[in-house]
Image 1 (cartoon, helix red, strand yellow):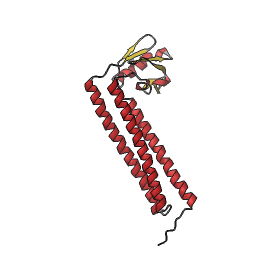
Image 2 (tube, helix red, strand yellow):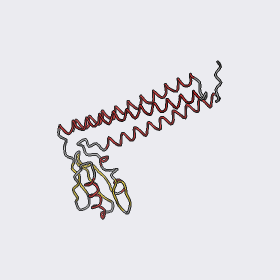
Image 3 (tube, helix red, strand yellow):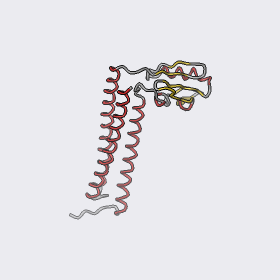
Image 4 (cartoon, one colour):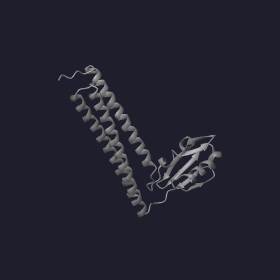
Length: 199
């Protein structure tokens, strides 16, 4: 039986390109969210990323810490937060104390100091286990994304918008994009694990 496609060759190519572009955008978002979740895991080393995205109630609305202060790391285990407006120093101090990150701020006259304690061996192991859980959750997300886009590709074939060869090429490109995202995810986990172990 002769298969009659409903789209012209250039339209079919454009549809697949659009599908792959959407997939790559989705993977970029997924990896970005994963990086953000890793930043919140304290490795025992002082990093600006531990506090820069904290929300602080200031000037009648919630604002990011980095919008209110200069954040520096003068020593490997110390963070200094210097608000541009010294009157909000107590508000920043309160937000830090209320955060689930377990940081202990010390308010000085013009800035807040946070000393990052070194991790115990037991705490390091807990964090490594937590990373493994996060890695598995992220891999499940990537598998779900792959399934969603393969299904969308199959629907294009079922609706006779693309042919079998185009579907096969599309499947290969989807798989390649997922594998690249998985490799990036694994590299991020390995880097964070090394940070936790070395400090």
